[in-house]
Structure formats: C-alpha cells, structure tokens
Image 1 (cartoon, rainbow, N blue to C red):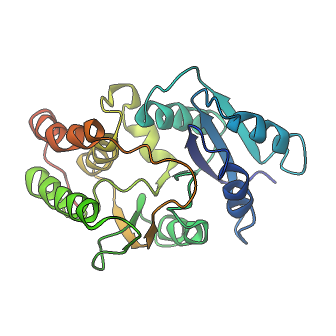
Image 2 (spheres, rainbow, N blue to C red; image 1 turned 45 degrees about the horizontal axis):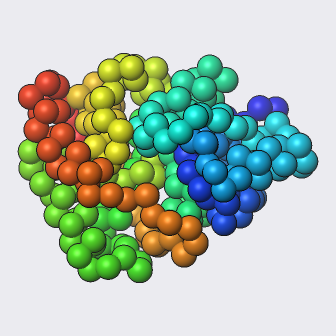
Length: 244
C-alpha cells in the first residue's frame, strides 16, 4: 500500500548528513517516503541517494536533480509539484542537517491527520526559544524577525520562518505555486501567509531546533534581508488573512 506522506529534503553539499537523515526519516514507526531535491551538489550528495535508491529504499526514496543552486524556495516548489503529481496527501518540508528532528515528524502529521489542521509548523518559538547551539546574535535576529513579520502581516504564527512544515495536499493545490516569488527565508513566510489568506488552519507544534554539526550552513545575509523586506511587499499585495 502506498504511503500517504512524503518528506521533501533540499540538498546542496550534504554528503555528511544525507544517508543518516534518510535512514532516520524512513525508520519512524509511521512510514514516510523521502524526496531529495539536489541542486547539483559537487560533493556527491546525489550519488549517495542514487545508491540508496537501488537498495532497500527502492520505492520509498526518490531524487530530483537540478543544475546549479536555484534557491530553497524553487526547490520546494519543484518538490511540491512532484508530490502532488504522485498523489501524496501529506507533504513535508525538512532540512537535511538534523536541525529538524525526524522524531517530530509524527507529531506534525498528527496535527494535520488526527486534529484536522491544514498546515502544521514545527515551531522554535511557540513555547519560548527552543534553539540549541546557535550564536546568541543569530537567535535574537531570528526571534525578533519573526515578531516583526507577525506585526507587519497581522498574523499569530510565532515562527514565521520555520522550515519544518507539514501541508495537506489541498493547501498546495489551492496556493498558486507559480506565483510564489521568494527563494530564501521569505519563501517560508510567503507560504504560511498565503495559506492563512486562503482560510486554511495553521497549527504550531513545539520543536527543539538544533544547529547542524556536520556540513556548512547555507544561511546568508541576503537571504535574511529578503525575509525582512519581502514582508512589506506581501502585506501590500495579499488580502488580509481570513483566520490565523
């Protein structure tokens, strides 16, 4: 029987993490398939995934290869469309570096499947600040950026830039994915805001975010600036959220 859930993992130079994260996701009691969107990683990330696909993960692990770094947002859009084409009902975003704990996947799934919400957000800030091994400056920047976004957009999501998310199929079918304009952290804000504007129910599920131990962070000042300045454009071009 086909699984109803798939976890999309974008990658660029994640050879240190990719095999372990795939094993961790697929070993959950609740079965999850995995789709890796690799942006031409020169370190051989895609080759590791291909090797695993030929073994015991056949039929549960999939790979889309893209040429060059095209941005986080476009990677997820590509993954969303692939998942919709392949009839998955619950579609997840997740990082490759274990900053998101695979053991939290069933909790996000339950918020949608059991509790009836349309979007479940793995939130670092719904119960305070649950971030481990980040420099204090980065913690404060992220935390207050989310407060800024909430104030400008008039929404009640505490972790607006969270990248650990479960969407029901109907949410991604309803959002015009081709109209999503941002590529970095502002992509995460735009997706949540679009869901709220369309009247979908969003629940934050508390998680602990742990900074990566292996590999290199993809964070940059430009990506963060996009989130800060992009919200003004969102507020001007979207209708007011129907509920939050």
